[in-house]
Image (cartoon, rainbow, N blue to C red; front, side, top):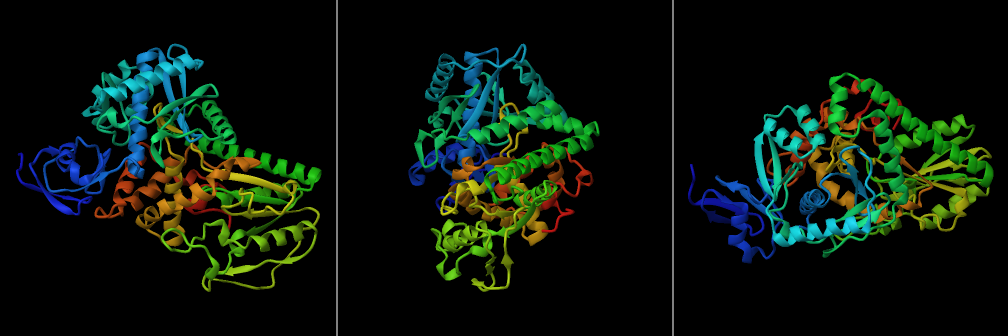
Length: 562
């Protein structure tokens, strides 16, 4: 029954608004347009993200989201991807669009021929036609129509459009109803809300890259211009290598992984994926050993974002170096923190321990130079309890066959070791670069993968709730954007710590923690989004994971001591 005179609490205005029952979020926005002062792309209703066609039939708490918010940016990119699909279908009707992964500040895409799967060469003429069609869609301000139908009917619709990957996924989900979006006369599915209409999606570009092209969205710092590509050649090569591996094992998307679960073939999959990790760690170890003998390389710097598995990688690399008759010695950059009184502060006034200048760079360079000369140093010890450095008897000297391994977020920053001979250093970047896809148009965010790892690890080892981990995550991400990601290409080697099966294993650990996030906090929106994401995966028993697996750093049960 339609209700009159509902009270909606608008978080943006910090007051109640009287409305007529059945009004949509978009209609509410138009009513409040002058007071809000911005055009939203999506809204949170009772701390759950909803598209602006959502109807209001009962009292709700509503917060309209700007396009520059983290949620708004995800909605923008999803909407842009559907516009790209619509444009490709119009201009290249016999092409299959693959949106593969985030790289170079954009999203790498390829076109394949539907009849034989071969790759279509991207020319300036093809890219120009697609881009022109996308701009036409923007000018027409077409609605993204959200629909929900019986899954069997959605499967038939997707099959007629040639979206076999989505058909495959839906057959493994066993849901009675499925939500999808319609743009013009074409349908697609996404695991999140889209914008109200294409008129809000006007800042974008397409750039030729390798055998495909980059889809460039808006620059969050300047929403009126598209982002510019950045050089990430090494990152791209890692993605390419792992996608080749995916093709060999015939698992490229979630539906393929779920098939492996139903066919009880995950044990072999796990063994192969773990063997691949071993091979790459062994290869990196061999490179270090060769450079040690040829150029006297003695120090290995390891960096990477949060929850990338750096600690386990260090331990496994140490083992491989020992098989090459080298002795690893490990130290932590944390012991080189300056006293708390001299620690830089961030914009909010808190101590910024992620800043490069929270480290005593002079002492660090002096100690490392002394070690390279064969001298003995006394390692400093930082007391987090006292906030000062304390001196203990911790002598360290590098023998002829010793390799020093240092883990820390600044390991790839040239300013960290600017006084040292670069030939004596070997730098490694570690990150979970997920190459599994949900389907052709929905990739899996490496950031989501790492956040799920951190939620599970923080609960197990630090007794921290998922709520608190999610609350801290934006600050962690800002530190990564400033101190880690700009230096990725400085690495001599890049190790992809992701495991193609891990989200199926992580599901049973993360879901109970995410369900504990209260409904009355803003972080519920992120918890709900992650729960919906994990819902695509069939569970994989953790008992099949070996004790030496990098995944054990987060799940527990590792044979390594942390």
